[in-house]
Length: 273
Picture 1: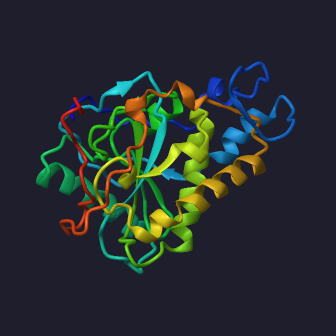
Picture 2: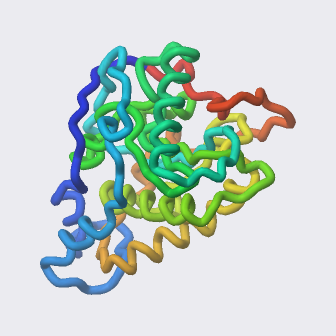
């Protein structure tokens, strides 16, 4: 998974994305009520959570720059990091987490950089992962990551700190996850009902854990509610245009899986080139 890296960051969602508000859209799903002409910009500003860029957490220089595709993603994949459920909710801890993930992905996995595009700590701190991710999101493009085998070309990955097979994520993490997913759905015109999935929906893995996976229906509902709260009259992309090979296959969840920090199942496959 090679490509090229830049440390630029995007400050928000491209205006043409937010202006998915026009009622002229055909075949889309209209979400929200009537808004005034200034509302799209307000929605974009209000939707974006505080996201720390790679410079903030002192990321290493990647081995190569990430590939950027002009075709936006059609799925948001929720992961867990398969690490301990730390009680440290500080920003410094979150930054150490990002550095540890990057070191593992580069030094142990031999990847060019962090695999996922975004990381959320148990304290609710949201951080840029793979290089060029924030810029690409702001431009409605897609940075190809390494987090969901054979589906990295069309999915954006969010790593959530912790292990959630038997425990539920803390409130701070879930609040940040709702805000982050709403921001992505707004920017890319995604319907949370179909766009938000778990890693196990594509690959044979326990990720993101039984408890967090069981919370995904509520997450989709909460994201839709947040979009309404933002008064985003959003025309969603018609999911019928998504190729069949991009749709979840819901493989059987394995009875047992390798247990190691930062390992959450298949991340790169033969179709990821």
